Length: 110
Image 1: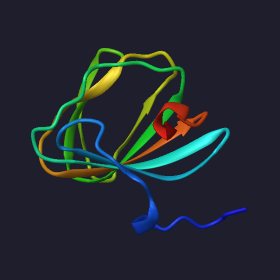
Image 2 (image 1 turned 135 degrees about the vertical axis):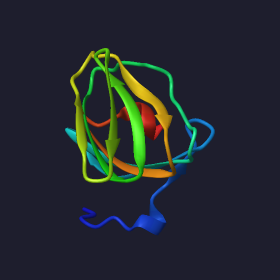
Image 3 (image 1 turned 30 degrees about the vertical axis):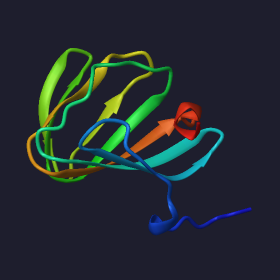
């Protein structure tokens, strides 16, 4: 069993222009991903059956969660319950976040 996951060995995905996602570690009930966004990047509002907590490592981003819109900065966190519409409206500067999902996002592993 692998207990350690190296950043440079994590698979890199580009789900949208200006976005880079690394799947850092996962097991059946949990997944941790690192995402970087170039300034000006946005994503479509969406929902999924996973609980999600996002920690902002650095940068400034405008998010919508359940119709509430806020700007978050490095050190802030946000929670997206399962089935609640959410999305990144705009990365106000180059930014880095860590997303945690429960259960793991099997769709990310395809």
